[in-house]
Image 1 (cartoon, one colour):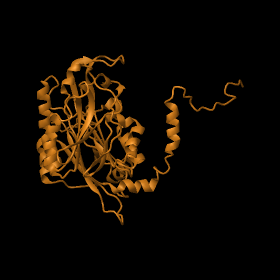
Image 2: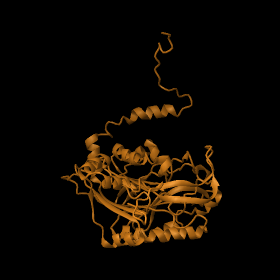
Image 3: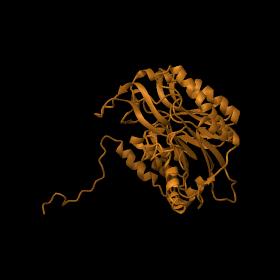
Image 4: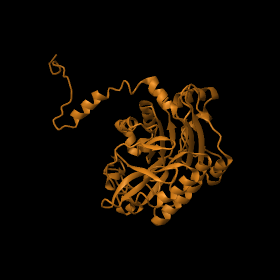
Amino acid sequence: MEKSQNGEHNDDASSICGYDSLHHLLKDNLKPHHFQEVNRLLTGLNCGKALETIALPDSATALSVEHGFDIQAFHFHADKEVLREPRVVRVGLIQNSIAIPTTSHIVDQKKAIFEKLKPIIDAAGSSGVNILCLQEAWMMPFAFCTREKRWCEFAEPVDGESTKFLQSFALKYNMVIISPILERDINHGEVIWNTVVVIGNHGNIIGIHRKNHIPRVGDFNESTYYVEGNTGHPVFETAFGKIAINICYGRHHPLNWLAFGLNGAEIVFNPSATVGELSEPMWPIEARNAAIANSYYVASINRVGTETFPNPFTSGDGKPAHADFGHFYGSSYISAPDASCTPSLSRNRDGLLVTDMDLNLCRQYKDKWGFRMTARYELYAETLAQYVKPEFEPQVIRDPLLHKRS
């Protein structure tokens, strides 16, 4: 919880009644037995019990204290099986604000972000994280509200400096790293994409995925810079499990989540950049629903802070010109297929969320709920096949007496 120097709670756009998360607000203001019941309803039960916290190495907690970032750690269990051993994977999520003002030189901005992330990545590595995911476009300010082309200079090839920076950590810590960047496609007209680079635990590039759905809502004018991706719904088979990445706005599209599940994903990461006024009531719902509906884990990451740009901009909505998006509210968290989820990271601080997850839970909940068995895919495939045709007509049965006068 944040407090001012005089001991009073801060209460601004970056906090919730002076608290840095809903979890902390409720814990501090409810009686323990009331909080326990409310928490059960908000975060669910994992294997019938409240989600367990885990202790991290002193080296990791020392880094969090020294550099002022939030650090939390939890464990999702699965039921014990006769034929399969537990498949426990340790996942890390990093949320962060930019490091220096957007008026600074582009080289300096990127370098400052690299320096800021080093101790957080080291904390993840020293904690034994197997798969680490960063936020959307982590290597730059989220400037796509401005529609100014100067920000294209942050774009880099798949094997560019951001990838090289992270490859050293992947090798050092035997860690898969998911790196969402602004990509410059050198071989295809130097066009720009919103891309994730999946770096293997040997420092190799396993592959890429490009953002499937591009927002055109509020200040999110991203189609000025890049269009919808062309990589489908790939699942990457890594040393630690089958993973996929649903970039930011794709979380609003249920079929996007579904396609990753049909391709066999066990963990789907959702690196994002979203602000409170636009989406915060949706944030705790969509990823958790996707985890339930598709019987996989979902790891949701959002950036932190308010980023101010040199020139005011508008979005054609009649509102006055302004120089910032609003507050990126962090609140990164992980959801499990059994409807349980972790508390979120801070709403206003950099953070590292470390979570152990037993991947056996995915199949166990496919068996329990039978969503794949009862999905009726052929029914929806037929409807969608008809819908995309120009001659499509909605299946509407009208009451023959609808317009009859009484």
